[in-house]
Image (cartoon, rainbow over all chains, first blue to last red; front, top):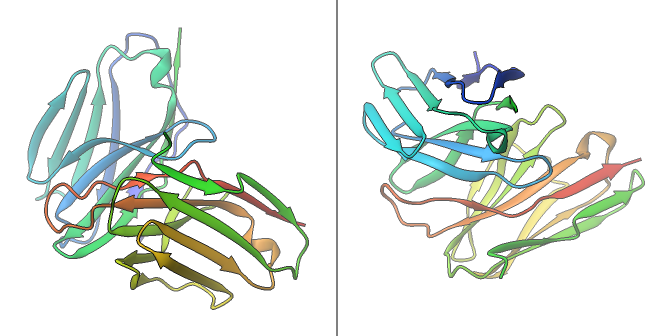
Length: 112
Length: 115
């Protein structure tokens, strides 16, 4: 079993839809959880960063962490064509260990 | 101004050749990283340097050798290139502080094709 599992999709939704992206992980030592967005032929950019279980909201994006289930989610409300990208979840142990472990990424297309 | 830059952007070369990829960051960060993204988009860390010291060295063939001449630069040299080395290589940097906010900033990537 890989440390971080993410459904690669692809996921295609109409503009305005609510999108739900998910990752599961096996290592309970992960403390910090991130979502990166990667446009085609570009580097990943950080979208959301969470530490504790619960929800964190930033505009149309909500990150959710459930440490007891080892499950994280990213919700995108009112999705826009500009949200079309690959979304990668990432996790780290924290402290002085800077290593990020990524999921495989989910390719999202938002159709106008 | 580009925060994390890489050169070259594209690299096409023959099997068996030796090549280098360069990375520079102007963010004043202490930690830099090399990641490999394969054809299935899986992004995996290879190396990390903190203040020019190697701190992460994943299971990578020793044909790959990182070099950090100073905090702002991290280069990747690859000897005896193989077909399986074809991938996009990303450089990243972060402040290198422990705690909640050690965000990693990625460069635009170097697309390496080995023929």
